[in-house]
Image 1 (cartoon, rainbow, N blue to C red):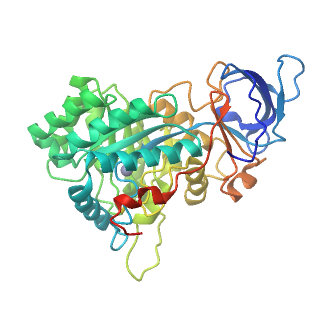
Image 2 (image 1 turned 30 degrees about the vertical axis):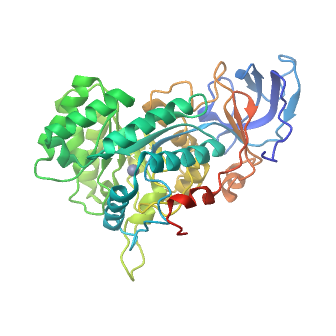
Image 3 (image 1 turned 90 degrees about the horizontal axis):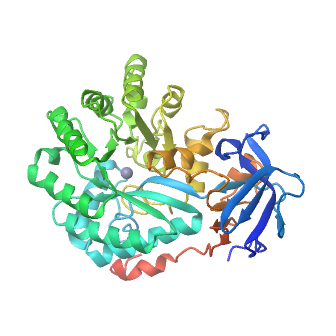
Length: 442
Ligand SMILES: [Zn+2]
């Protein structure tokens, strides 16, 4: 068990007093925030739900034992809207040879062809889910590589895991394939039937600047409208400013009068446009109702990497400009220990910490905790999660950090995670558990 707050009461009714929480995540009026945007509150828990949130020190409204958090930051359990459970943890048997994007693409393709049986995919996905759960994740959206024989292998496994993990992590999935396959009727039919049988009403692909991009996007949008799907794209993960598929997606959404949700991931090359092009594209993204997720750790790993040359660019999209224009923005984990990102553990506190440094979220307002909580919950249709809400689940992450400098200075490895008001075991799974899938290689 976590040692930080071993004394979380096990009574059905208890109070957490002296908590600090980001005001942007608290669904209660009348609270005052400090200079870090944090409000000092007492949280009453009854029967696994939050009964009330009041200014700290309010007298006599709830019974039961109390745990004094001594000013420590409390977050809701967090929401990871862009991960790749099916690729996770293959690094020991399939490294990225040079740390480049093409190296990643080719390495994953080779590994998929050679190793991705149902048993292999299931073991690695379950490992990732256990990491995410122990770190305090309440919900995640994974992409599922959806090409050829892999479609019939991975989607049923995903459906089994979704059922097994119900009540611990809410799992959503979105298909992943190159946009050129949208022009292959049989492929689209196969993916649609997998999503209809095993998915969550989400469809999408990776967009590239192929000559037939607009026609292929028409297929994607037609398919989504016919089936009532939301959309999720991997977009412009490159330093080439000629990559403007984000603008084509926005044009297509407007052209089709699409009313579902659209999430665009990466959008790296948006940050390298001329200012007038950037402004035009962002205005279209806003008009089309597209939300944008940046994957700061993976983007910094892959982008602007050349042998013998120090990187000059952090690889991330124009997130501040998108937010200023009113576009919903978020950050997420992306890959874990695979050729697209050699590290990572599906820990959203790490993502928020590294995202804050890479994207300089500090000194730019105090509501950035939304990017791993309220905003991804909204795009995933999980309203009521990703916030601290009276009547909502007592799904909480408790830390000893009293402000953002204490919070980001350390990995918060001593955090306590509550699910429905109960402290869970936050012991992480041992990487050795996957050794039998790695052909004896570390
Ligand atoms: Zn991704």
